[in-house]
Length: 448
Ligand SMILES: *Cc1c(COP(=O)(O)O)cnc(C)c1O
Image (cartoon, rainbow, N blue to C red; front, side, top):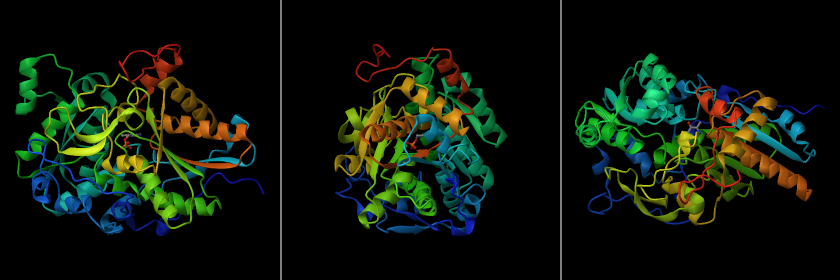
């Protein structure tokens, strides 16, 4: 019988609850602290910014949290997402029959990434609590487009503070957000005190994610009808993404295969959490022995070169301090094309698992990632997001290592999104203009 490539899960078999890893963590989860006083933050401190249900989920001891039916209904417009075996890639790599590569593809969502998996429930819970408008920030626009479509679906307004340089240089995601009905504001702006302050100091400021966060938080904090939403890092965001791994487990069962290693890229940690946390649970249940491998850029190697300590979530110091692996909240990574992986910190949940040795991490250079991305595209037809190409690089390296060692290995990786809005990055790669950066000085890497 020829090998199958697609493992299609019927929508009636889609999981109906998210997996919350908090009760199963291997160590104590340190609480977030107030940025000025260093006191542990209670739910009341977050209430002006977040829906109560999301604050509850942030600290919930419940192992499974039901996905509201209204959210399941929207999920079903693009889920279950595909799980494919990369048969043509396996052939191109010359892998022996015992080395297999599978991938779970999140690029089928409206925004083209995993981010709507959390944008949709975040919009839903806010709508339910009477909120009429969401303020958020975006770098290149991936999170902003996810939040824009989610707000459109629940008939809410959406204000997106977009990092100024991306607003000017990357118009297509802005146009997508505006087409979904969002208001996109170039940050720094004169809308907020934070923005005005930056502009007074530097009228030509290009903006940064830290400044955009400050503006969105100030917007939400100063209006009763508005809340703030975040697209990664927080526990409730990781929770919502676990639908990815829950589906993957069912689809791998259809494939009659168990992964030996589960791979995903890490920016703030949410898509990695999404695919790997359900496998962490499966391991605890004795049904899996999968290694869980997080992949990050050499230019921003938080888990592999950062320190495990309390740090601020943003440059300005408006967000709580979190216990996590960090390169320092004032660290500005080199301008690699995987914009979604240029975050100085990491999810506290993913950080704790790394600290306790429950997951592994590796850092890779962007040219090597684009080599893998193009090899994957030519075999499987999907042009990956530059972020996702990190997972592909590591998955291919796992396969080649198994071949060299003469071992069998089943590899599952998360393909977090497509790269249709990232063609300028591919142009740079195709014309040999892509540079590799190392962490230390943010400087160019020798020989690469
Ligand atoms: C935002 C993004 C990431 C990085 O964010 P995580 O929270 O680490 O998942 C990775 N891939 C894609 C396609 C993204 O849009």
